[in-house]
Length: 247
Image (cartoon, rainbow, N blue to C red; front, side, top):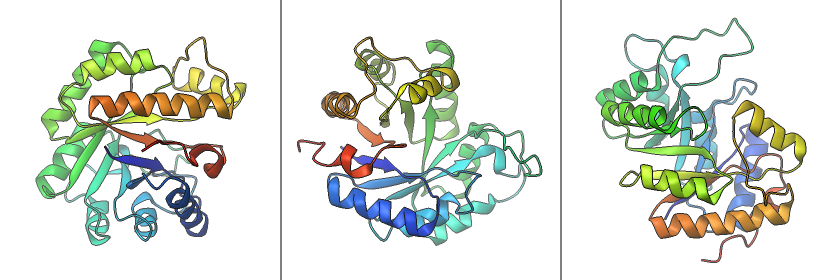
């Protein structure tokens, strides 16, 4: 079982400090995954060069809408040059700055081109349990597999019953299941409104509930033979992750 932790690349110093904290409090972590966020100047693949000082396995996110539709994929050379061997392709949200050039690519377009041009790179795709109906999302999974995806990262899940359903639907695939603490009603409202997530009736937005849920989720994921990633947004890394896992 692999455990990854998603870190926000605010700047190099803060990123390195966060990576060192994770390594100290969660020794079971074997990888980092880094989103490519337009509000920060540090690109995900450059951030992964930083986190590789702490853990060799670092997985940058590539936004499909940022990739020109013709020719070699510009960021791929930087990724290979940094010694990175895994990437996560997401479609990407439209930028707030409309001067930022984007292209009408799908995730499948970029996955296919990456696998043709760089067959040694392991390419993950996204699964969103909330985006639409089960059948529609499973059809998207099949399209991404046909394009060459090696595995998937899910949006964070907050209900073990939903995890069980998706585990059955994705049986046989390599999956990193997302786990994220939700601290406060505003954070819950964000997940429900923006990402269309839902929470069990037992949910309370406290550190204790989120840590207990994480332990239960990891046990379930481990029994499935899957992998997991933590997305510790707006929470003290040490308080959330320290002594979290029993193995």
